[in-house]
Length: 148
Image 1 (tube, rainbow, N blue to C red):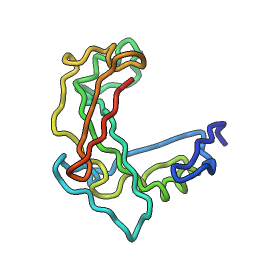
Image 2 (cartoon, rainbow, N blue to C red):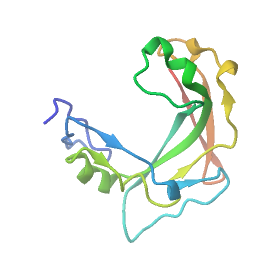
Image 3 (cartoon, rainbow, N blue to C red):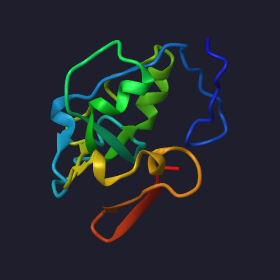
């Protein structure tokens, strides 16, 4: 078991996390920014969301150094990372998050890609400043996060 034991979102019960974590996104989870997210009440009782900043890769590559990494970044786009937390807690024990985040419509993305040259790399690092991102939730409220 990993030494990481984060708290469950719904309470103070620690969740065991496998030392290896693998996550992939189902292409059917990806929808446009104005499309509805379907709440599958027959599958989950605990839906959660997090605003995330995704990296848009502009060219293929592997085994490149950290100094070369930005050569592969084409831009950035916001997305809403929706998770069935009750399912995820069970998946955390195996280290594979495949279903809890990959349910159809669980990844609204966009509406715009910002090219890498529009945001200085220093604004994306941890520390003062950063980039603000805001997304509407439920049509009338919004969530704002900062990359720092």
